[in-house]
Every structure is written in C-alpha cells, then in structure tokens.
Length: 161
Image 1 (tube, rainbow, N blue to C red):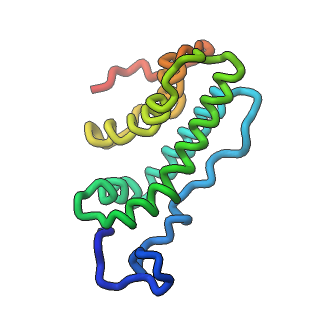
Image 2: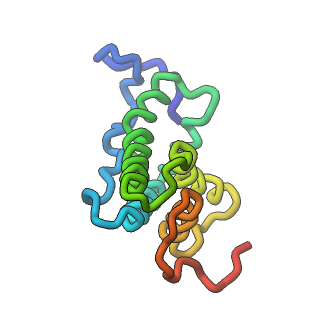
C-alpha cells in the first residue's frame, strides 16, 4: 500500500524511496491525432481500459483515494499518471470543439471526468466491463457534449444487470 513510510528518497523530493516508478504506470496513449476526434477518443479510452486493467492498477487507484495516502505521493501520482491521460482526452475534445463537431458551450471539464470516472463506477458495481466499453463510452460522452456519433454497433444486444 502506498502511504507514509519510514524510508524517504535520498533526492529530497519528499516521496518514499521505495515508491513505484509512476512513469512506468503512465501510459503513453495512442498515436497522435487522426482526422477523426471521435475515433481518437475511442482509442484513448481503449488505451485507458488496457492500462487500468493491468494487475494492481485499479487497486492502486483505490490506494490513492485513501485518507492515509501521503499527500506528496498522491500529488506525484496525479502529475505522472492522471494529468497526462486527462490532458490527452481534453485535447481530443478541444479539437472536436474547434472543428464544430461538438457544442461550443459544453462543459469539457466534466466531460473529461465522465470518460474515465465511468470505469471506476462500473468497477465497483460489477467485475467485468461491458462489451465494447471504449466505443460505447465515447459515443455516450460524444452525445452528451453535443456531438452526433456515426451509426455503428456500439452496444451488445444482451441486457446488462
């Protein structure tokens, strides 16, 4: 568990010496932007799903939310893992807005949170993600911000619990 520990970094950065290498936890994300921001959003969410589904990753998120997690550790995790992902998602939505593919007055701060926050809410409710989670989530967020996704098969015909 990541919390205050007795062994501190000799670099004097205030972080535990035995901290995990957060740069290794931060996924680089998919290749650069394409001509299709919605496709880029789907790719980013697929990359997120892959990363957060690795062993120990979801529990690490839970650890970061614990009251006893050292503030310095949480700040480092946010800077190295959370901020880059949110920045890439925000860049996709900003580009879609500039291209007039989504509403100009939409709340992109909340939209970014919906993209990954839905994963954590789902993980608490059930162990397995729904089929085609990245495309389904992207389509839902896209509609929420005023976009019109192409007519594609984005959900399973089987009901979810």
